[in-house]
Length: 369
Image (tube, rainbow, N blue to C red; front, side, top):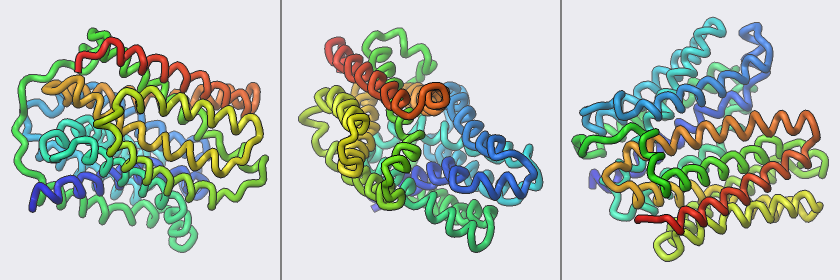
């Protein structure tokens, strides 16, 4: 029974981490007003967590060493709890940023170990990974609107504090339901894995996929406003489609692993071109989100197959690649948006997604799994 509840406990932790990471998006104005900073400075609360997630994931092998992986995940969940308390009580900007940096450590550490832990506790790895991503998709649907509603009633600090009991419940769930997970054979340094061509190609495709996805998604709102779209309906529909996508992809992976990794970014590129062509927005974005949310399940399953005993180091590398790509997609997309507008940003996404599809095909040709 304990193992049966291990994956739900991890899914709760994953969802709470993502909700904590992106909650400032809905709270920039009140945070800035209360702490006497600009909204741009408040926005760095997201960037700093991403930066520390990248650093932590690249150092994961040295950070956790011979520590039982159950205890390691527990420590990262505890860091999430402490981060929520620090941010809630932050009297000034430096303390706020320190709390967000601690959250980045929790994000990088948890996600670096998650795939290798799922390999050890789940009977079906793709479905285990899908459960984690379903937690992420659900938190993505609920975090911003609930955070904004709580802030409106009780202030931004309460909005952050609401996540602390959830983080505590996730910590209890990991402690209660994860079995002991002694360290396995010595892990290579994450960056050393790039010496293997198929790993380098796969990580390159992963990077381009997330860069393209977030170059478009980060700057989607101006397009929706220009089209007169209902923002709440659109984002809710995308979130629900993402939930469905995680499960469908998990079930198709055993039969079509590389076809999905090649096809998903290609389909998303075509959908982005459809947005540029002025086709109906809502159906295109529902299909986009259905595909996009399933892709991490595919790449996580690929990594566990391709690296086997080195999946823990591979998880650290993959998290670093994804976090860097998300930051890069938002940053580069912003530069393109400011210089040439939303259509140019969407074209950037198209190019990155097509390149991701090409590298996935090359990964298939050089595969060793």
